[in-house]
Image (cartoon, rainbow, N blue to C red; front, side, top):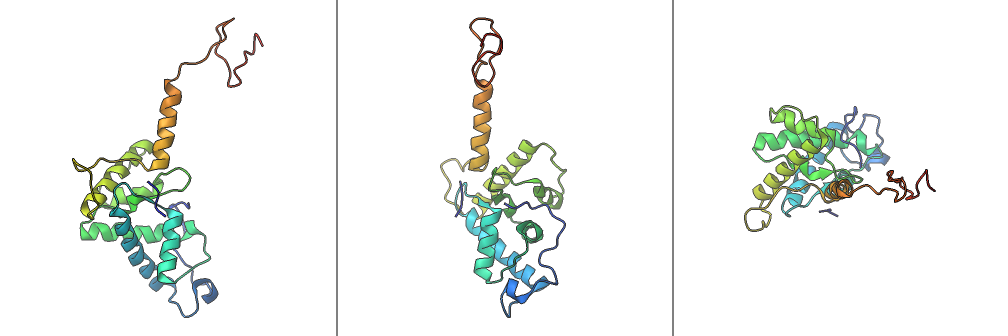
Length: 202
């Protein structure tokens, strides 16, 4: 389940009062009570993720695991309820003196924590980080703190921070492209387009 979507940014507050029992499961708690149960379970799940060095979990995987473990399900779109749940985890981790567990949660498509990570910075009293890659490196440092704190088996030297695998792969591809010299036409010495065929010489 864990790699080594949904967006945490939202305006919703989780399950709405109008959610039906058929959406949540018959005789299951709703609203505030359900959010509290989900948040507690999310905390436990993330502690489990933190016990494996360099492990991360996607928003989608986390959402499914929360619902599966609690038996409380919703048809509400992921991005309308996962953010408030993770917000509670941020606050609880800070209260307990634990590292920010939500740094372990990344997007499926790009491996980034996303702009919702600003909650971690705000609770810690740190200024916002506008640069995307700088934010991701901050999250990588936070993940390393989680692995160490929650007893992951660490390599000699205590381990190193790392971007999520999908993001790291994308960064390396960009570096590789940037390092390659541009191809030029052997006749007119103009840079070739992506087709490899000179626009001037054919």
